[in-house]
Image 1 (cartoon, rainbow, N blue to C red):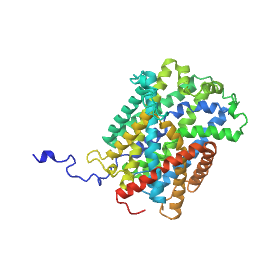
Image 2 (cartoon, rainbow, N blue to C red):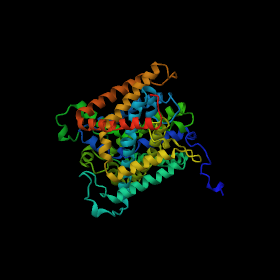
Image 3 (cartoon, rainbow, N blue to C red):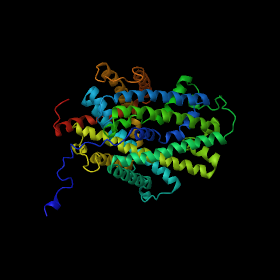
Image 4 (spheres, helix red, strand yellow):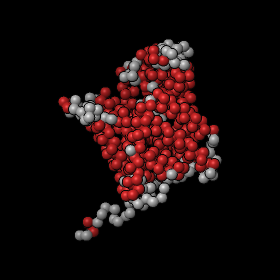
Length: 476
């Protein structure tokens, strides 16, 4: 009788079970691609067309932004030589600069950046589903009810409920093993790549064969007095958002086979694949629809959907709608996987809830870290504040990018990293330069958001000391 009442893990110490290295380099490459390709590639050409730049400079903006991200990819490929432990940027910053700055990065990921991204992508996914199949809105009559005049928990209730359900299902799916998530990502990302390639081919074959004009056809009135450099940087930043997410694969270092070799391959190859796809698909957009028409679409229209509809009619519109749904779903699955590993590593170091460092004895996943991520992300969905919060931490997020690049140079000079790093020191130096310029631009143009985001990040300070005391951490 006593045997039947034994705990499920049969006395196994779940705090010391290692993660399982089951992800190969090819699957890791597709994880990078799947994480980067969200919804930006389908619509960012619209605000870029509104700058007044001609087609050649818009394509150049995509190329230059892609090169900057490639510098970042080489930087993180170098940092991957530092350790085989999970945690990504958190772990790199911990090894380079100590526990406190690393904790602030990890805390920012948990409280806003990571959880807010999960909430936002889930919401976009549900909105896209709602376009094709109308979701019920059971609490519509209470949509006007607010908390503190800014939080409307019952607004868009059907979309929110569907978002929460999707997060819960994918969290459970990830809980069942990293192989599940990797396989799903491989299938979805392959479909995304094929869908984008199909759009490129159809656009180039069926579009007007006349060459791009090279003439600016639209000028946003708000940019009438801006310099060319300012306008070009603005266009480049629009494309830069579509490249974001290339660093997240580093969080999975504990489950990648031979990570010091395969992680750099995955980061660099993934970024280069995305860069080629982005340049080609935006060229295809501009072959089908003149910039004047693209600029006139406005923020609520998706360029890829309009172009596919023009070429293939209703079937084309449906195809791109499904592709966007697939893209958002795949990105959501992979960021749920990635961010949980950051919290897992923080818990191992005693600066997060200790139970988050448990590994399931059968599935070999950090299951409690997944549950913590799920709960907070779902709460952000229900609050509807995720977009506001994530906009506030753009400044701090890029500040940590810059700090990580500085950390690579520091560890290389101290000979902690002895391996040869491709494109070093040019790549991290250029990445630091561009990120620094970007940070200055954000601080000048959005000082209130930047300072508020920094203040939100600093709310983690008391939690840092609480976790250290509770978990008995005595080292710095």
